[in-house]
Every structure is written in structure tokens, then in C-alpha cells.
Length: 477
Image (cartoon, rainbow, N blue to C red; front, side):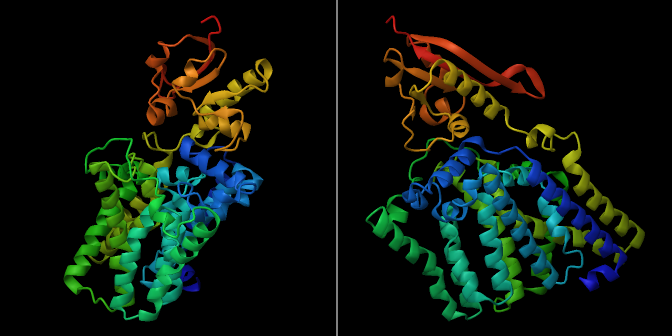
């Protein structure tokens, strides 16, 4: 740190990073937002109710290690889970910053800025989604490898599939990374996570030591498919223009260094950077691009998935910024102007009028939660104690309902639309997308509308983009 502060340029970098960390803490503490309503709410409720239903700690969809980490914070409310996720993202970025320092990059604290100022990355972090925890385990595993803590690296990496399922792919990457540096004794540690969770699931829930594979919920796909380039294109949404430009420049700079100086496989620093940072980042994006293109592994084209590797992207983007800084050797004024100009662009971009920039409503209570609370208040007043048929996660959230066993919230089916007196809450996303109940299908049933709520796009208030309807099956039929 003393070396960092001796240089005036680096002092500015350190001050900027410190200011961003203070702002980050303020946002985390004061935000009322959540990103990814359905999955975020479901993960939170599963963790909250795991305290009274321990079998949920081994729920495959909920991600067992994520559940274990969040079960206590979730008892403090949604804010508790958000704070853990925010801390995980910070740990992931700090790990990448320390690797950058070890690789001799002077402005290494900017890794934190490049990660925290990625527009969508911050919004995903303010949620109960699994991506920040995945980022932390992956980044710290890489850091342990970079600092020659090979057994710890392998042990941490072994738990990655229990945070997000695609983590199992990187077990093979770590096998290669350990073999090339001849760290044979660390290899068995890659089995630690599977052995512990295999025994736990076998004894307490599934009765099968191979439950991770036999109970996998992603063997079918309900969401279709898309273009192979989709996940490369949405890096623009995740990172924004300046960080994406630096990422591309960093990839090109890394390729240039590899071609010019080579890659000695048995050198830990080079293998860390080229294989575990560049390689893992590019393979992660390509893997999800492939899943979406072929329509496999339950891929729904969710762009938030890429937040899992934002800390790696921040390291690579810093390499791009260093490449700009090196232009000072050719023309010092021009190099400095471009370097600080790009740094300033990274800082101000999230506040520009651009479509992916931050808006106030991104950090307020989602309109969908307010709508669910409005309908729930109506139900409490006019239909207390009645069973509701719905698939709406927001309604479960405002009722703090058990995600699997609540006696008053039951799955909405076509059959439930026929029984006189049934109360139905249909909303325009989860009902048609996940369960095939389109709004036009409701016209075929004897339903009376009791209440309707909707909201519009902040950019185009004329057209509703979402709506929920409280209906009752007509008793006159």
C-alpha cells in the first residue's frame, strides 16, 4: 500500500477506489431492490424456511452450499441475504485485485472499480441470486492457486457445483492446472465437496449417493433456444460500453503477450492468468452460449448468469487499461489523457442516459412487490384465510410463505380454473412463461375479475408491460 501511495497517479486510483467502496456500502445498506424477481425471491424463501425444514439445505435447485451460507442471514430478512451477496462480490473483486498486484499491475485497486461499476453486476449483487457467491468461490480458488495454496484452491473449487451446477465443468480445468505444476497431492481435494454432499444427501434426504446427478433439475429445457452469439452480445448489457471496450482490449493484449513471450505451463503466475482467468472467463461465456444455442441444461437466456465471472472480466479489463497506459512510452501526454479519460468514462457511465445505466427505480422496492402487497391486502380484507391458486413468487414474498408447503398458496393449474369459488391470482410472466397459462386461455373459463394491477415501462408509460389479476371462479356456473 505504501508503494501505491508514493506515486501521485496511484494515489488518485486509491482515493477513487475508497470513495467507490463507501458508496457501495451506502447503496447496499439503503437499497430496497431485488434483481431477478422469481429466482431471487425463491432462493431467499428457501433459505429462510430451511431453518424449519432442514431438507431444503440439500435442495438441488436451491443450490445446497448457497442454502447453507444464507440460512442464518435469511432469518434477518431479505436485507441479510443481500449483504452477504454484496460481501461475496467484494471478496471476489479483492481476490482479483491482489492477483493483479502480484502480476505487477500498478493500478490494481481499479479491479474493484471495474467490477462495482459494471451496470448490471451491481444490480444482480443486490439480490438473493447465486451469482455473487459463485464469483467469490471461483475467484478465491484462483487466488489460492496464485498464492500456491494448491490444496485450499482445490478444496474450495470442489464446492463450486453446489453453488451453481456449471461449476462441475471447472473441476477438470483445475485437474489440468494442478497437473502442469506437479501438485499431485492437491488433486484429491477436488473430491471434497462431492464426497461430503454425496454422504449428506444419501443419509438425510435422497437415499442415493449419486443424487447430484440423478436429481439434477436441468435435464429438460422449457425455454427454447437462441443464437450462439447471444451471450457474447449481452456482455454489453452486463459491463457497459467502456468496460466492454477495455475487456476486448485486455483480451487482445493478453493474446499478444502470449504470442510474443509464450506460456510456460509450469509457471504458476502465467497459468493463473492465462488458464484460470482468461481461460475460465472465455469458456464460461462460450459454455452458456452453447447451452442457449442447443437448448439444453435448462438455459433460459438469462443474462445475469455472466455476473458470475465479472471479477475475472474486471481483471482482464484492467489489462486493457494498462495497455492504454503503456502508450505513454510513445506519447506521454496522449497516453495519460487517454488513460484518465477512459477511467473517467468508466466512473460516469452508470449515471449517463444510456439504456443500461442505473436509474433510481433500480434501487427502490420493485413495482411488482408493491403490486403483490396491494393484492395481498385486498385478499386479507375480503377473503381472509382462503386458499389462493397462483405461481406468483412476489405474492409468496409479501406473505413470507413457505416456497413448497404453504397451505394457503397452491399451484395454479387449468383444473383449478374450473372449481366454483376458487380464488385465482394470475400474473403475466410466471403463469404463461413457466406454466403455459396464457391470459387468452382465461377467457375460456367462468371467471370474475375482482382486482387488477399493472405497471408500465418507465420509458414508455403508455403501454403496460406487466399485470396481475385477482379472479374468482364464478359460483353461478
